[in-house]
Amino acid sequence: MTSKLESLRSWVDQVAAHTQPEAIHWCTGSEEEFRDLLELMLATGTLTTLNKATHPNCYLHLSSPNDVARVEHLTFVCTPEEDDAGPNNHWMAPADGHQQMDALFDGCMKGRIMYVIPYCMGPLGSPYARCGVEITDSPYVVANMKLMTRMGSKALERIEAEGTFVRGLHSTGELDPDRRFIMHFPEELSIKSYGSGYGGNALLGKKCHALRIASYQARQEGWLAEHMLIVGLENPDGAVHYVACAFPSACGKTNLAMLIPPETMKGWRVWTLGDDIAWLHLDEGGKLRAINPESGYFGVVPGTNEKTNKNAYDMITHDAIFTNVGTTADNQPWWEGKKTGTPARDWQGRAYDETAGPAAHPNSRFTVAATNNPSYSTLADAPEGVPISAIVFGGRRKQVAPLVYQAKSWEHGVLIGASTASETTAAMVGDVGVVRRDPMAMKPFCGYNFADYWAHWLSFPERSEHLPDMFHVNWFRQNEKGDFLWPGFGENLRVLEWIIERCEGRADAEETAIGYLPHASDINTDNLDIRPETLDELLTVDTEQWQAEMTGVLEYLESYGDRLPEELKRQQKMIADALDASLAKAS
Ligand code: OXD
Ligand code: MN
Image (cartoon, rainbow, N blue to C red; front, side, top):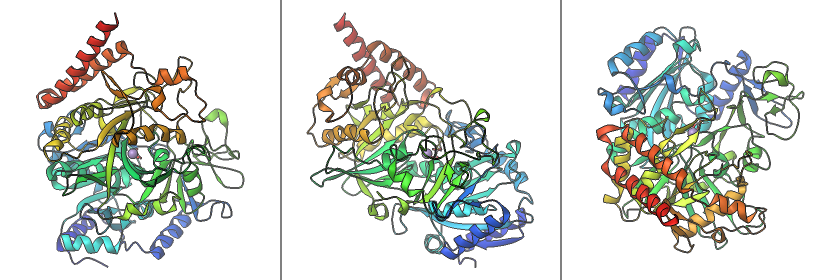
């Protein structure tokens, strides 16, 4: 197989001449091809079969122990001007980036098969979808791309009709951390990734294309590519509101996207559209509509159990690839927080020894097709996407951020998004639990200068009067003893209920310096075991803490220099002044 498209053929030929693979395989995306890849990986030991009776069609991959997460320090955006990449990215001049990467790719596929994967991010017939081609020497990447994207012959047809595609070149190389880089060339719509097989570094349709490159394209074309889940919330009257939520990696996006309503919230249903990425476009009527560019999930495994996420727990009992989990004596996958079974082997294949660390790596993952999900919404395949009622930002904060609050305007919402902070997690290499600013949860993923990105967000009211309302949530507030104040998981629907009722103009709120907060009585706590004082604490704005927060926000924003939109400073000042006024009134 090859392609009618000369630009694609000549790129493939050129890459092959450079990397010198033993053979070239153009992926069709067929089931047969998928099965052959699995057989190949079983034969080479890249995969092993898990217990066929309890986990039919489930496989385990154990990665190199040094290749278990995204590597932000080795991820670059290569634009001619350094300022265009901004302080939020590592930068290299495009010529230097190419030179460095081309030296690594030189002859790197000798003795390997080079796979050419045409893929479409978004429903194949959607005007909002965008295509790419990933070239890789990793069958594990091909199998994951099959589960995560619409890939193969149909995508190739669209690429040939359009004539354009994002070029992604990947090789696992030697899996040597000293010979590992993920480079993006937004102006050329191209990506080069070498030396890692880990999802976020190697499945180029995901973070590299659907966020870094797409965010750059989105700014030019007037849309948004965001690190957001998309969920449909159906109330007992049958009305469905779609909400898009931006939370940093490993902060519960997958759990929220698959939430099961608490027993007492009779008649509610929750539909999953996406768990990680949303592409948002204004339609002709000025409504913001979302598509999920992906068609599968690459989720964090530890902590998944029948209580935290029953849908995910069920969906990974069949047709799933597990990466870096432990196993039980009868070869079932095992992870911390599974609540059943005991580990016999750890994620490095060693006999489990609790003194040597967890059985599953904290960033171990499952890969499954979205159709495995019992709460999957067929509208995830709708070319026109779904209309978004609310945009919700959030982070993992022990203190400061209340359970929920609403922005007073779109511009205020942009400030809330821009000042989002969160404690770091195992999804990236580095210290865990350190608070860092993660604007719109896009710190690792925005393909250009954040200052320009905020200006782009701020431009939306010029084009629409029907934008969604914006909110901020924090499920992770703790008391001094380190206990979580809010039960989280399914109970988060109670907060989402307030959010959608606010969008409908039905729920009450109190105006505070930082935004609109529910009164404790505005949150549905029927049959919820929570003390009134705890709810009050969750819904309190501590003025002094917030004054310090807003000073920190200003300092952070000012680090973007002259490119920072004045509007954000104006919004920051309005809140700082309102906090000063409320302190003066109280004293
Ligand atoms: C992810 C991440 O894998 O954000 O989704 O790291
Ligand atoms: Mn993510």
